Amino acid sequence: MNKAELIDAMAAASKMTKADTKKALDAFMGVTKKTLKKGDRISLIGFGSFSVAKRSAREGVNPRTGKKIKIAAKKVVKFKAGADLAGTVK
Image (cartoon, rainbow, N blue to C red; front, side, top):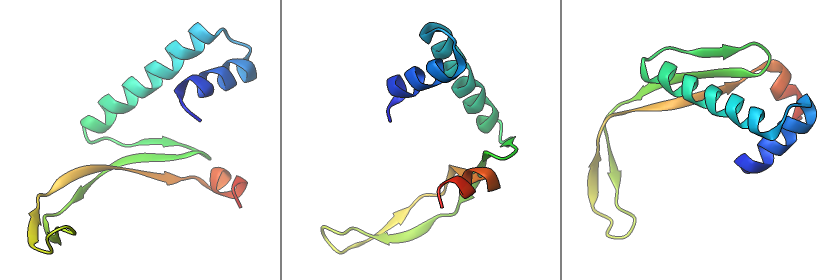
């Protein structure tokens, strides 16, 4: 499902217009980005939680040449599904 299909499905389920649904989805994504950029966590009970984790520097191997390379440390976004969400995909 892409963003347009998600907006269509959300609009149908909520009986909102597609324009209002797009605004709501864009607002959610914007707030999520700002919150994670600050290093905070977003927790939606039953759905899941978004957080930022630090991935330390490490050595890797270039698959094309086989040479060892250094991979820099970075921050990554993590999502952990909540119990309700995890239970629906079983």
